[in-house]
Length: 484
Image (cartoon, rainbow, N blue to C red; front, side, top):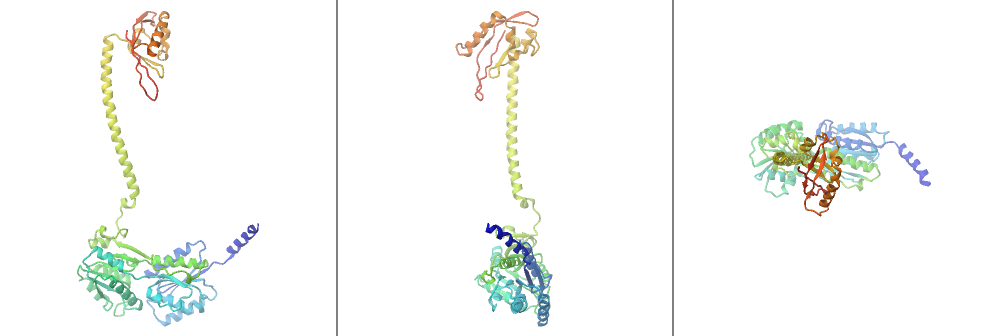
């Protein structure tokens, strides 16, 4: 009874609680593909939760405005906008946002737990205070991509690495080259960060088949010019004589050959899942930092075709984008099921045709046999009777009706009515002789009796017959034949 009274009260309290608030702080601008993918993954997961929190989103635009003035203005903006809003969790994407949140969360963001996304291993190692923090590491590990590249082209000896001279670019480039060197494959690593964008394009346009290009992050060249990643990646892909591998999946459809790619959307989804667990009561620093499960092995069909790479050279289970629609591959189970059913149907039809032909041949032989029998019976003036002992239905040949003058069914002859036209003096003897034969006391049935015709004349019959039992589902069939 106590639980019955408490439950409605608890439910009412839960329903009366205000929704929780999550601040999503992005390092870069809206429209930047990597940021948009993380943002999309975060919002998709948070909005799909049973008790969806209220989402607030801010963009630092750090790639275009990496200045202290930008930080001062952002500080004032967030302090003004959120002084009356209790922040329950902060999700940051990439390094700049994480640094800002760490510096100011206690002062202007209610000391909320932080869930980071898009930060590499070096960035996580350098976090000074890991209290109430967890997140998803942007694990820079091109080794799987290089191994797959060697599987496709075992003659590779040189890897040209593209990265910029920003803090994150140098960090990413160093991590990538260190990881490749750890494979001990004797590969020569050639960094291109000291070249301008035009020089990089020119360099890759003259590479030999023993080389590949690995592009990491590239948003400014050696001259300091800001570079639009998608445009430059597309130009690089078109100019390069060898496949251009990438670290991030947002380069797909922009000249990326493929590889084991970091997915911004998966990063965002995973960080949002951690945030939801924290909102439900778990502490951030008790949740382990996620270091894997944010990669996807994917290749661009158009690039594979351009370089003449067959699909069977790719690792099993690889995702292929831009592949022409194939009804068979899309509906493989359905196609195989229909094909199997069609094959069974064809076999059934062939068997049916075989049996139809067999029945036709049997019918033809039977018709010829019946024809010969009819001619023989007609020539001998025979009258033929036949009775099925399981149903006691009688059959009389045409000559019987012609002789006695009755129409079919006129005396109910098929159901035993023929006995009514047997001469009374002969009926008892006919029945006795038939009974003896059916009981096995005689090997042949032979009798003499008279029958009355429709015109009143009497005809004498000397029928002879033998018992013919055909077993069909336990039913005995007797066929008797009489001849005049």
